Image (cartoon, rainbow, N blue to C red):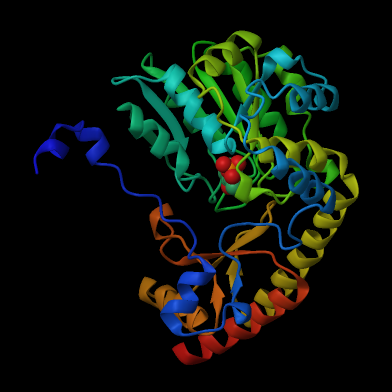
Length: 372
Ligand SMILES: *Cc1c(COP(=O)(O)O)cnc(C)c1O
């Protein structure tokens, strides 16, 4: 068939995104009981969903014959209050990935350039390539973003810079002062997307008030999500905050009903459930200690993380990393290989419940034993 040959070359060149292996798939492949499998591969909330959000979504199910409120009025009101921004500054998305895509569709075109860091979130090159724009990957510094090298990479063709802080899969956090200096120096003709999907997992001392920077920098978009600490990854809802003119353009290219009524109801209730957020945060801090302590005992190097996940290194050849990954799968533990992130020696594990972390560490010890 040559119909597909007419698709733009830049579309045909896209590598498909590789999601974490679903539990049901591993159960089929290995003949394992689904309940015996733990998935620590997609940075999901191990506590599940806020009970308040769950109840709100169940109620909303009764109304699914109707289209959702395309303006997201109530949720925008709540976000506006919480973050002290105007509702005109908010862009709701089908997950924050949708917001990244909207920004790319508004500001990129073939011939334009977008900049992101090596080892940065895979969706940045994806949304860039979808437009036929050129993606520039700037070498990382100690696995984190080298903001000043990224600044140096800006040319007259550059229309966007993506910054993830904390970044996935490295867990690295950009220094707030450096970020602010970056914003001061970068051309106002370049849109900077600051992706803060893991913001709520940051200790208070690391929570920069980046939203207040929106008043100073009209070329800044901040993205946040309900997929992580709020436990709503499955209903796909996130948002962006920007200058009203930028938000206006992004809202024009948005599908009129890009966010579902279930997502809107869940997100609104989740914002109210501060107890659940605190519990999720505390569990993550404890799990971080449990895992880093376990890594130390096993003599395994890891990248210090500010997210709800940790990337760790398997010594020796990259095939060892594949062997560890496969052994963990056989033991019913799903983690994430990082080959596509140019980190073939690393695996990323999401911080789970205490019992899940314990099973992971035991399985990892067993896997290392198989290698020896
Ligand atoms: C998980 C994650 C997101 C969230 O994506 P959603 O589309 O909101 O589920 C965004 N950015 C990064 C860096 C992430 O790791």
